[in-house]
Image (cartoon, rainbow, N blue to C red; front, top):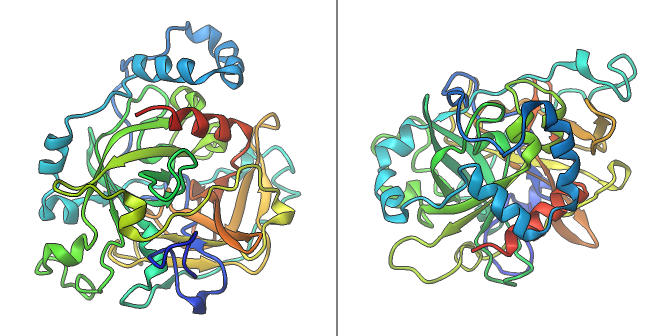
Length: 381
């Protein structure tokens, strides 16, 4: 893929892969299929509403202001962790041991519009590995590391532009199921992001255990100090495709590695603007990038699927923005990876890997609610 937003640096792919970034379209948790289940124990704090009033509560979310988001986040465990503790947590062994988070499958029997019988789901497109060394544009794609009650896991993420800090973004876009356990769950711990993971290829071909840290994280490990997901995910999110999948996205803020004062965007050399409200018919040649870890992949290589057809829309809940699907066989570990296309000549992110199967992946259309969440998050620090 060609370089993102201004800067010469890294993003998701080489020119050979077409003029747009390809994101790792994966299943509803494109993290990995055999590792820690993102299912924290029940009983974690929930918004101050009765279970019977969930729908009423969710109906009010679109009218929230930044202060409402901040109060809700504070009441639901979205509190900053000890930065130094998280930095010290991720040594190279833990990075290597992080398994792709289980990839929920897409239950097409629950598809409502069009119906499962009416939807012509995409044909298989096999993922291709990015050639080493990764071109500068791919540095915006990286691994998201997390700790759940089940163990260490990884997903994928993308450096996105921050309109409130032009040229100096510290924001990463990923899937909600990569950072929060969903219904009856809680926020995951020790979140961190590694842009351009294994850029040189030093970890490839079974050399992960002996590769130097400089090749594992060539641009450093960036730990999170805050993130948001939609309340719908915390109330309804499950380990298979359901209406909450239509809100399976998250935005994460990270801080520089110790000793650095440069932003993430400055360090990787660019960022990708988020295209909110993209219509399926306007999305040409979509691509998906990620670090799939379940067979036949190993979680070490940056893979991508490039689709000639436009995304196929479908929904579980007609009242919510649709899911978008493209052909791709990426597996667990690719969840949260960005989906890219071109708009007005620039590479943009329009979705992320959420759910899927061995033939296609699906991600949420980022509608008005996603934009309101993103705008509110920009006002937090």
